[in-house]
Every structure is written in C-alpha cells, then in structure tokens.
Length: 112
Length: 115
Image (tube, rainbow over all chains, first blue to last red):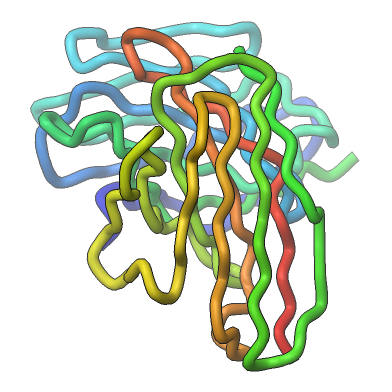
C-alpha cells in the first residue's frame, strides 16, 4: 500500500511561477525524500529531509516536514519549462531497513 | 552518488517467455533494490537483492516469478518469468550506497512491453 499521498495529482503553471506540492503519510518515518522522473525514465533524487528536521533548502527547492501532521511540502521557486516532470515523495519508515514507499506522484507541467 | 546502468533499456517480448534485466553499479554498494512501475502508476518495491543470499521479496511478489541474483556488491539481475501482458512495466533498480543507507539512487529503468 502507498505510504505517501501527494496532492495535487496534477499541476500546471506558467514559467517563473512557484510550484507547491504536498505529501501526506501514515506511519512514523526516519526520513522523507522527493524524487523527479522525466517521461518514464529513471528517478532523480532531489532532496532528503530527516524526521528531526523541519525545513531544508537546495537551490530552488524548499522542503518542509511536519511530523505532527505527517505531511511534507516541496516548493519549486521560479519554475522553468525543464521542471516539467512527475514528482514523487517517498518515505523511509522507521524500522523498515531503508525500504522506500512511494506516493502516487504529481505531474507538473510548466508552460513556457 | 552512484552511477547505475541497466540493460536492456527496453524490450518487446512475447507472452510466456522470460527476460533478464541487468543492473550494474560503478561502486560497491550495500543495498540494492528492484522496483516495478506499471503504466501511469507509482513505484512498487519488488525485492531487496542481498549479496550472497536469497533476495527478500515484498508481499505479492514471489521468487518463481521474479528470480533475482546478486553475485557481488556491484551487480544484480532480475528475471521476469513466464511473462504476460500484465508484466508490461518499467523495471528499475536502485542502490543505497552510504553507510547511513538513506538516499537511494536509481538506474534509468528497463521499459518492458509484453505482447
């Protein structure tokens, strides 16, 4: 079963705008990770946030984690057409021995 | 990070046949995993490939259907046996190279179509 559930399922924005994607999960986690997938290819790791962290930045990416609400958000600022892809959150549940459980994914379209 | 390659990148197979997918990593890694991504869906973990011992399968996946080998710390294979059209998916291997075994890095995937 899916641990992470992202919303919205699809997002379409104009280049230059910010994109916010949300992920909710059900059980306690060691960490939560966000991945990007372009056109059914391999996944690219974007960022990892540990359960004792609340916010993390990497370039144009900002990730927050609220363990009390079991939710995370991924913000992409100043979006570009090249950001068009599917985005997945994945949780490493506590005691799961590094096994990741992926959400259904969000399809982001950035219009030039 | 680790560089991962998979072979083949894609294949079209007839039902009833088997296909073996190879995953090669450019460095020794502790953990290797195999995932399936059905069309338009998310990733589902098939199994953890254990070096020198039998793979650990997730619920719904069995060794007879998806035999896995891992002869060393840089290489693994996944076989999709007795294929049916329902096996049409992207198959991805991933590795968790660090001692903390946190971040996973994914191969480019093998796109399989079964007719």
